Each structure stands twice: as C-alpha cells, then as structure tokens.
Image (tube, rainbow, N blue to C red; front, side, top):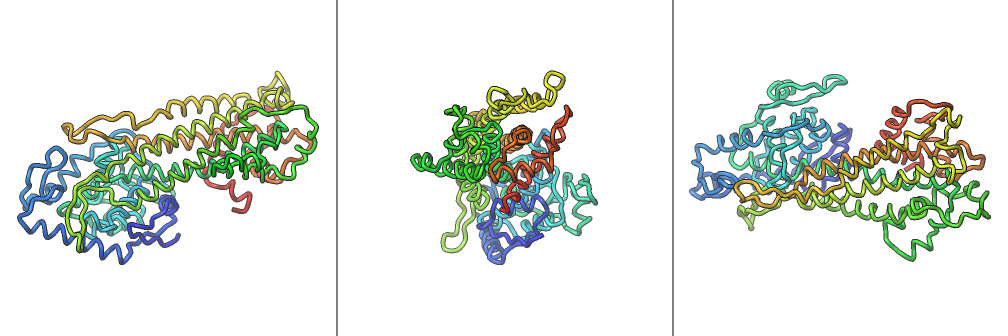
Length: 507
C-alpha cells in the first residue's frame, strides 16, 4: 500500500485504479486544506449576509428562483440528498464506488466547491476504512452531474442508506450508521452548498472511464501480440509490418502497433521456412492489423488526456472562487459531454478490435488458411476441437455490436425544460467499460486458438511469440481431446486484464 496525497490537480488514472484495488492510503495535501478553507469562507460570508445566491440559499434546477431562509439551509441540503437518491437497477461494483469516492474527494479539494474540510476528510476516512456506499447504478443523465448515484454516496456521509464493508475475505452490506460507527467515523451535518457540491459532478462516469482506459490500454497491447501469434499460426507473411510501409503513412498509433507486432515476430523460423511460399497476400485481418489497431491506440491517447483533465477538474455548480477573484459563478462544468463522446468512441473501438480478432481466429481454425485439421480437432469428425470457441467470440461481437450504438444521441430534456441537453455520459461510460471486458474475452480466445495451432507446427515461432505461447500454456493446457473451454477462456481473459501479459516481456 502506498501513500496517495490528493490536491485536486495531480490525480492519475493509475491512482484511481490502485485505490479501487485497496493499494493506496489516501490523505489530503496541505495546499488543498488551505484552498478549501478559503472557499468555505466565501460561502459562509454569503450565508451571514442578505445576498441571494443560487445553490447556497435557493432551490435547485427549475426551482432556482425560490429563496430559502437561513434557518432552513441545513434542511435544504439534506432534502436535496434524500430526494435525489432515487437510483435504480443493479448496484455499482464495490471497486467502482471506491473510484467514484476518490474522484469526488479530489474534485472538492480543489477549493472551488465551497465545502468544509470535514466533508473531504470524512470521504477519505471512509475510503481508507474500506467503507463504500451502496449505490444503484442507473439514474444519472450525465448533466447536472451524476446526481442520483452521487446522492446515494452523500447519504452515507450523513449516516443514512447502506454501505458495504470488508469483513475478512467477504464484502458485507450493513447500514451506513453501523459502518461509520464500526470505524469510529462521525456522520457529517451538511452546511450550505455542501449537498449540492457532493452530487453535482462527473464522478460516476469518470470512474467507469478510468477502468475502460486502463483495460483498453492493456488490451491494445495484447491485441498486437495476439495478432503476431496468429500470423505465425497460419504461417503468414511478415512483410506488412515492415517499418517502411508504416513510415510512409506516419500515424502514431499505426506505427506503434506495427512495431510491437514486428518485434514479437523477430527471429522466426516459421517465417524463414516459407520464404518461397506462393501465398502473396494474407487476409486483411492479418496484414491490416496495424491500420485497424492504430486508430484505437491514438483514440486511447486522447481518451486518457480527457479523463485525466476531468478527474482533476471542478465539475459542480455553482463554483466558488476566493482571493482577488472572489465570487460565486454559475456555469455548466457538470456537463459530461467530453466523457460521453469519448466513451461512445471507445465502445465502437472495442467492437472493431474484437471483430478483427475473431476474423483471425476463424482463419486459424480453417484448413484453407492454416493447413491444419478443421477447428484444430485432434480426431476430425469425432471431435469438434475449438469450433465453439469461435462461436462464443461471435456471440460476444453481437453483444458489442448492440453496445456500439452511441449513448449521446439519446438526449432527453428534464427539470421542466431547464436541463434541456444532457450527455448520457454515465450510461455511455458504463457501456464502454463492459465492452472492454468483453473485448478481453475475444482476444483471449484468439490466443487460445493460435497457441493450439503453434503446438502443431514443427518450426519455432518468433522470440516474442514463443514467450507468449509459453505464458498461455501456463494458464490453458494443450487440447489433447475435446473438453469444456469456458474456464480456460475466462481465466486467460482475467489474466489479460490484470496486466500479466506485460510481465512476459519484463515491462
């Protein structure tokens, strides 16, 4: 476990992932403390004046014109949390809630939300104690923030609702009051603006986006490696990966993909053995792999940039500014369009990478291309070999096809038309995260098929392919006769997502 000091400006996607895996001990930086105290001072001054300011002493959304008496401000914040905590559907995963809590704490500690130190300090105590609010996943429109999910988070801070805690090796559900008491944490009493600051922001969609990016960066590396294994499995040509081809069309991602494939194929006896082969060109799924993988690598670089900015931004409304520029400004930083559009692109990318992977898999199982027995069955006819591994991948691609539809096009105006354009970023980012998990399964299946084919080729594959083949064999035994492949397939998928494949190369 490592120390992680948050300040609102320097949180990384890796910090978010590590925290979800209980690998960090979170603290609040001194600079953040100072900024938060100044920000709260601005709010406190307004509370003790006759000034009327949205979000502090007014109603919310379409009710923003209603002024609230100072003696009712605490009740205003509590009512906001309770009324907005109306999420539905399955509960968020424990790890995703931890991500969301960290991102919310980091947003608040920028000192532009007008909350007291105790709000973030309580969030941090809960994080470090492993207390996660029970949060129904569905309810956010991705504008005005992730209101419903974050309201369930805020409920736990005031000692209401339910939480999950770690008890030995299990995650158990209990009342928030009991969970806080167990770890000596006092529920907070919300002051002016604090309820709104807690629920108005993009923290849920950012949590899903962080996992999506982490998964896909690992899977794009794996897809290049898997493509190289498949090239060897069909005794395909290495020419399409020549650096001269890719230097003549210098997209960064395409060059990265080609370089990875080229390196893994180096010193291949398989390639040397068919130097005079009469096969001129392989199918597009092999020779165009860098041109298909490359755009996704580029897309991921931009998605990382967007997500890193988002998790280090003030995404609530109104924003509180102290110092020489002191003031309360209403705007729209809660709108999740950046995450929404990026997640739509990544979901589509998952479909494309899975699709090209499945096409390579199909050719490995086809004697016309592999020169081996159909479906790599040991006893042709009597056995089906890996036939249904491809079927399962095709079924996943059908799922990915449905999930590739954009979430951003489903705008539904709410709040009596005041909130008339929403991003659906929470829906989109959750869908992208699920898509990345499905993609891992397809790449795992391709590796299973290529590894089986390589076992039946007498020549030695490229140095990197040889290492990957050995790694796969540590997880998935050779196919000596028909057997259920479900556990093997899922175990390899899990290993891909964990990052084990990079350890093969010492990264």
